[in-house]
Amino acid sequence: MGAVETDAAEKFKEVMKEVAKFEGDERLEGVEALEQLENNFRYHSPTPEKQVKFEKLRATAKGLAYLMMEMCPECPERVDAIKHLELASMLINAGISRNP
Image 1: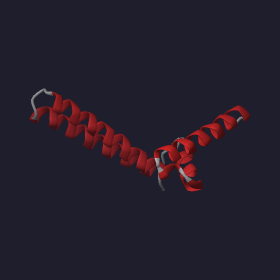
Image 2 (image 1 turned 180 degrees about the vertical axis):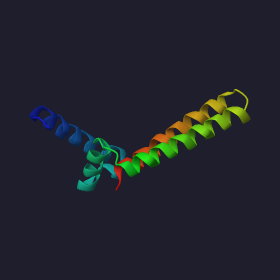
Image 3 (image 1 turned 60 degrees about the horizontal axis):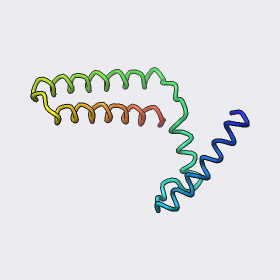
Image 4 (image 1 turned 90 degrees about the vertical axis):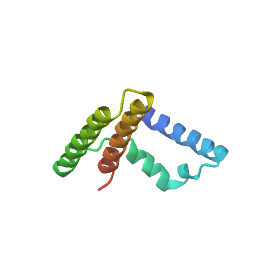
């Protein structure tokens, strides 16, 4: 990271610590929390094993989305359900990517 990026990152960390104190949010306090933030926003190149998991999860989620469309009439609830499925798919992919 360059000097400007480092300065910006440090300022952001300071601001987030203050926000956490104001909101009573303890998740952003401590060295471990900062390390977790760094990990969460770092690029994680997928291993071949993780790539297989991603493809399996994506195919399964896609199949479930098609089933939802088949079983449920077009309505706001179906739209929300599919959006939540997309979010769940992204979150599980992040969990696989970020962890050994």
